[in-house]
Amino acid sequence: QVQLVESGGGLVQAGGSLRLSCTTSGRASGTYTMAWFRQAPGKEREFVAVVSRSGISTYYTNFVQGRFTISRDNARNTVYLQMNSLKSEDTAVYYCAADPQIYNIYRPQRSSEYDYWGQGTQVTVSS
Figure 1 (spheres, rainbow, N blue to C red):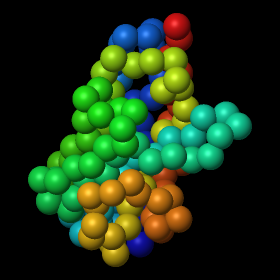
Figure 2 (spheres, helix red, strand yellow):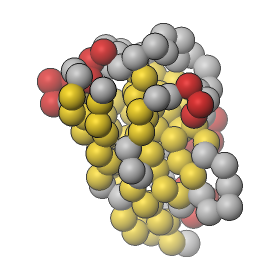
Figure 3 (spheres, helix red, strand yellow):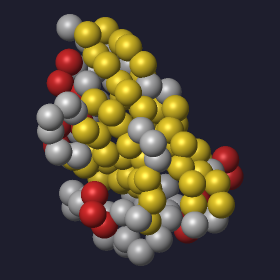
Figure 4 (tube, one colour):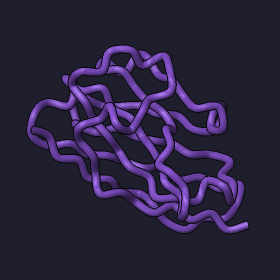
């Protein structure tokens, strides 16, 4: 079992930056593939970015490529999502997810594949 707690959300103007954090407890985070998803009001939850267990490999959805960076620090049991050049359409609740059975990260991740979720953190981008 692992517990996930997100932080770092807030209100930012378009063009600004935020860094989200996801801290895990329980089993060592280095044994899980970690991902970020988001859900805007009235929309389905969608994949944002994923990072491998080692932190060496990453994969992003097209609409954040070049603007967002996912990383992890296994010594701190924390995964980060650095978000730059934010747009109003990035407004959503951002969720951290973990799973010990996912090995192929070089594709868009499906939320149904992830067993463990945080409670989410709100990101609001004003235009």
